Amino acid sequence: MEKNLEMITAYIELRVTPTSGAGFDRIAERICQYAQVKSLRLMSGGYDFAITVEGKDIKDIAMFVSEKLSTLGGIVSTATHFELKKYKEDGVISPFESDDNREVITL
Image 1 (cartoon, rainbow, N blue to C red):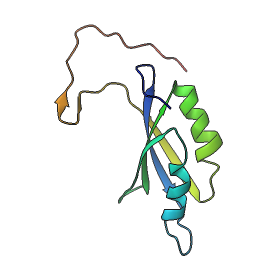
Image 2: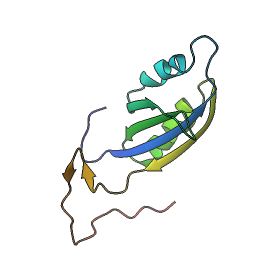
Image 3: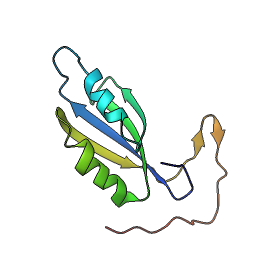
Image 4: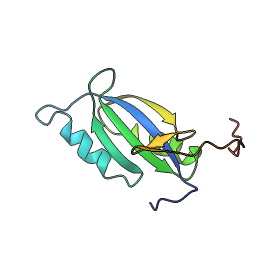
C-alpha cells in the first residue's frame, strides 16, 4: 500500500493467547504478512501487541480488523484508535494551523 495524503493511520491494541512452543512469534509472523500493517510491536502491560495500520478510510481499516485481524486464531480482543492530528513526529513539531481543515466524519 503506497503512502499518500489520503491514507489514514490507526493504532490497534491487540490481546492474544500465545501458542504453545512458539509464544507470540507465530501470531506476529501472520500479522506481519498484511500490507496494511506498517509496524508491529510486542508490548508489556494491558495488551500484547501494538499495531500501526494504514487504510484509505475508517471503513477500510474497520474491514481489515473485522475480516482479517480478528479472525486469526488466538486473538482475544482488539481496540482501534484513529489518528486525528499529528503534533510531533520523529522529533519534528508540525506547524500549528489556525484554520481547522479536518474532514467531518459521522457514524
